[in-house]
Length: 212
Image (cartoon, rainbow, N blue to C red; front, side):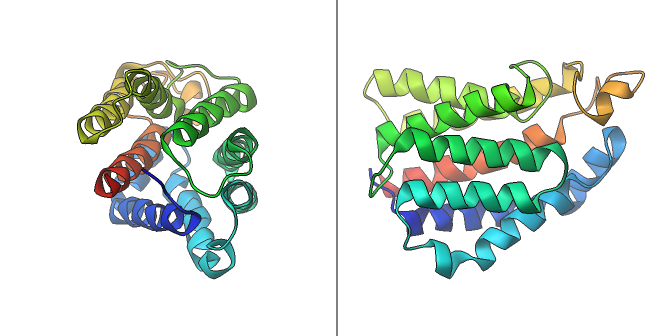
């Protein structure tokens, strides 16, 4: 399994479309516990990446990931921009100078992104953030990779791990962001950042499955 920079951008287009399709749902979800601008911010970041496609598609993988991080950091508002920017820049450093993403470098990417979000956001799994979708996906990917089994079935399991993590945020107490100031601490509501992260992981696993 090998993914070029151009193909990674195709995956991001799919993720952008998925997020766009759920505009009202994400906005309403965030309006309940936050500022209601999560979809707008995410859409700005992804739109800028798609608009920069011709400039980005011939970059080597690490330069592509770094550039994506810089775009996200500069265009996505609030804490999400800093977290996504840090995640992609950390992934660029981790994967190194490679021509294609393969099974190992995708593991490296997920690990670097998880660690960067934990470090920059001062969060851990269970804090009701985007990490609660990403980290279970990373852990399941690592488990399957160590079994030398990144096949279609494994990718389904990874997607399901991300989904389960997202759904668990409904019962979590928010420790960060606007929801943490609510009397209910966001309990009873999904975290919008975890939802949009899940959409991205789901689309990535779907894209990888089509390459097997």
